[in-house]
Amino acid sequence: MDVTFSLNMAEQRLMQRGTWKDCIQNYDATVVGGLVAFPLEVQTVLAVDVNGHPIPIRSEFFEYLDNGPGMFASHQMLVDQGDQTFVDGRRRVYKLVPNITPTEVITAICKLRWLEKNLLTR
Image (cartoon, rainbow, N blue to C red; front, side):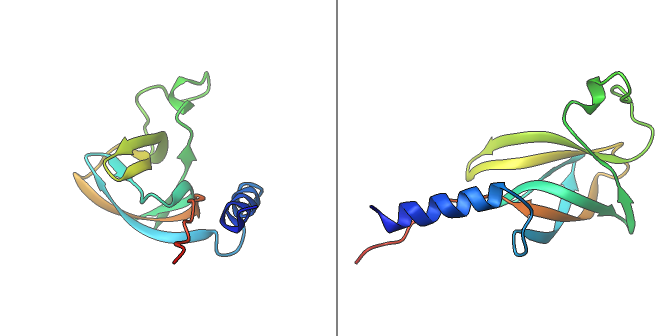
């Protein structure tokens, strides 16, 4: 049995079962045009701060729920847009609504995504 494969599978299963120490990380991200694309290793945003104020994080279906705000949110929130494909791979994208300034910096605590490790044999 391949040791690399076994280690990758064990790590993936553990990371999917919870939020563990060293599986969360703090990121500063720039919102451009209302959207922010986090690095490849980010699976999801757990908490976010905009200009010193925490704001809620909503799922990509929030606008369509009966108790959701529709397309016109009156208070600031971060809405998950799901994974999108970029040149370097799939990245998690969020939309800041309403978009107050063209470019804004947010601070987020994120759960890391499992990424396959390849050990080179010599």
